[in-house]
Image (cartoon, rainbow, N blue to C red):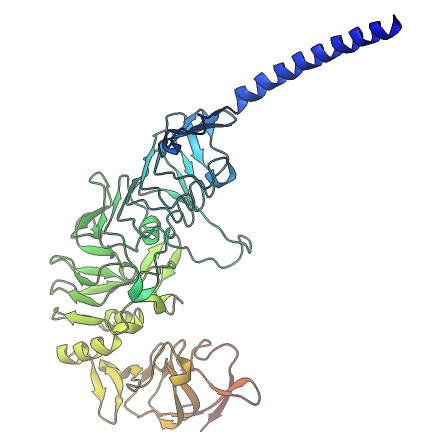
Amino acid sequence: MREHKNIEKRNLYEKKFLKRLMMFGVVTVAAVTIFTQTDNASAAKKKIKQSDDCVTMSLKKGVLTVKGKGEMKKSVSATAYKGKNIKKVVIKEGVVSLPDNAFKDCKKLTSVKISSTVKNIGVSAFENTAIKNITIPKTVKKLGDYIFSGCKNLESVTMPGNIKVKEVWPYGVDADYTPRSLFSRGVGASAKPLKNVKFTTALDLGVANRMGDCENFEVSEGDKNYKSVDGMIYTKDGKTLVRIPLGRKKVIINDGCTTVSTGSYSYYVDIDCKQLSEIVFPKTVTKITDDVYDGYYDYGYDSGHEHYYGCKDIKVSLNMDNLDRESIHKLWLTNKYWRNSLKDELIRKGFAKLNEENERMLMFDNGYLCAYLMKDDSKIDDMSTWEKIDGLVIPDNVKTIGKEAFRGFFVKSLTVGSSVQYIEDNVFSAEFIPETYKYFATVYIKRPDIVISDKAFNENDNIKIVMG
């Protein structure tokens, strides 16, 4: 009798437990529901739903739909969709952000539709996808670095012009940081630029910098500061060129432009796809100015990223009749790959000449030494080819040795003529002595009242100055 009661009691407990288990199962299915058809059903008709708090995702016939209210918190690779053949993504109204790596490595993804409620898109969100064209809504306020990295099929991007970028920088905010392009599609001559970048709101030049791997810029018609002409960005009056799309091979600056900013062709940004091989300055240009952006005074000197240019010998054409010495010098300094052509043009136009006492010295009027010209077999990017200067005498008709005049050379010994009054910044690099692993140079100075910049030599060079 007691055994019979115990069996009934145990059966009652089991029924209650089963009921609770079923109730728990209902709650779980409400949060993460998976719909499947029979094993014989076509994989193309499979529909999967996955919840992420208030945001759900579903996949049907290659179309991934993200809907709900709030943030999409997980990338596709961290959900049940990893490895699925996602061809199209639709982000519905109510979704406010996409996470880092949201659709990274969806190699069959060719179409993305983003709702106007989205405000933030994470780092590498579309990296290595197959999208060809994408529109980022005006509502998006921040994009992550590398958002389009590896998107080799991407042809055009439409996006806000004043968007902020979430930077990926592992060494802390105080470390030196060079802004990156938002996409990387190869290096140098093998790179493939975008065809077009269209900005839908007022432009922040820093955004244009990050999208410079393209052939054409298109500025919003409502922009009060800038306009686009032939795919390049000018001030609203059309008189100053401020940005060139560096994915373009030939650039013809618009007639009527009077001023060219050095930042138009020398961005302070890490860009792989610099295709520029020819640039034509019209007759109307009379001034080259420095580029001021966010407090950074960009001369373009030695930016560290110029080696990504696809062309190592850019052709320059100068059609103006007048150009002041300061502007000429800025042209010389701000792109090392057009110096061969620029030298010929400066001489042709009478803006510069070769020193009659040493024809390797490119001179401006009033005794300014612009540059000591490298030999044909020397390469400015390859220090192993740099020529050693030993015993060179600066002629007495030189009054100023200009900034970076001996860039591309190592100095062992050099005599500065008695007429030289000034030596500017970054003029000399001392010779490397392998046995000591140090840099040494001897400079003989004839003029006792000469003014030498504190930055004339590299910081760690060992320089022996001999007066008299």
